[in-house]
Length: 156
Image 1 (tube, rainbow, N blue to C red):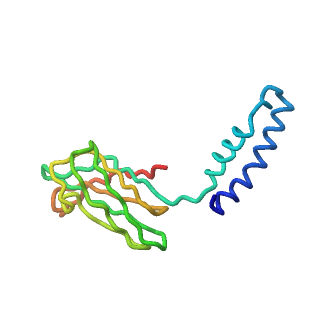
Image 2 (cartoon, helix red, strand yellow; image 1 turned 135 degrees about the vertical axis):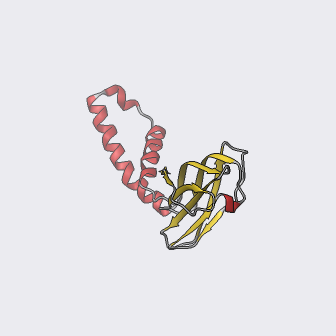
Image 3 (tube, rainbow, N blue to C red; image 1 turned 135 degrees about the horizontal axis):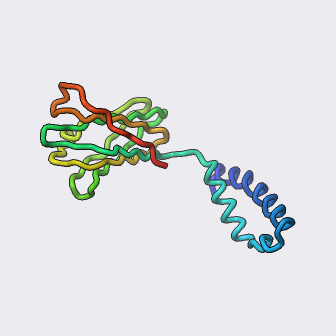
């Protein structure tokens, strides 16, 4: 078990033990929790305190074709370089290469620049670094005029 898991467990276990004791006073039936169940609950609580090491982004609508294209930027604010694996849905529609993102920098691309054509759907980016953020815009092909910003959500 890693040091951070041990320290998180060390913090969570006594708290859960206190809660279990209070429950047994208030309700003797609740006291029948096994040590395995208590350990499982403590492990689940400890996971809440572990630092995030990945980020998943959802680009709700992307398109490339019929005169439209999507521009995307992904930011890495950490001090280590990382990579984002891109997936387009509906799946099987198109494949895109993973994008490397330098430390404290960003990567920008268009779907047409990645070779995607005649596609409309949504895209996820699974980044192997914490705190990734994204931006997207749909505009007429070539991006010479203003377009519409698209919603990007950080998924946990």
